[in-house]
Length: 201
Image (cartoon, rainbow, N blue to C red; front, side):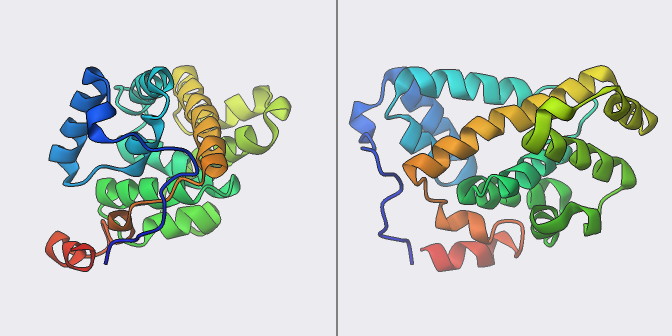
């Protein structure tokens, strides 16, 4: 059963109130996912910030580079857990499970990535991401050397830091506005799609 709880403390614009470009983006996402993630609906309250947010999101999360899409989602899940962001842990945990085809992985990464079923390279990546999340002022050359030893380039290291920093903003705003995760996210990547669809109808 779909929740009746509000998805934000702030007003959520109706579809007829969306600017044309935002409407097109939301409808595209709906067609692809089968539902509209609440982050799109809640950020439509601030159209200029919606555009800036998703432009930077796409620049970080959809680019080609040394990090896989799954690894980018690992960074989001691990650091969002540190920042107590329910929305991002749940939503990006679902995306992580799908990308990695690993039903248990998001929970492992959110709770303790050092015990997760990931490579040593990925554990080093998340160690660094959590350091950026908790204490970026202590990052030093030794951190770069450790990551280089695992095959990361300096551009990859920038990406790890930038994803961590961007989602630090996202986490804090999601918490402040009390952004609620869509019910659909909870089962995505855990069970076959047909079964996951059933409880939300």
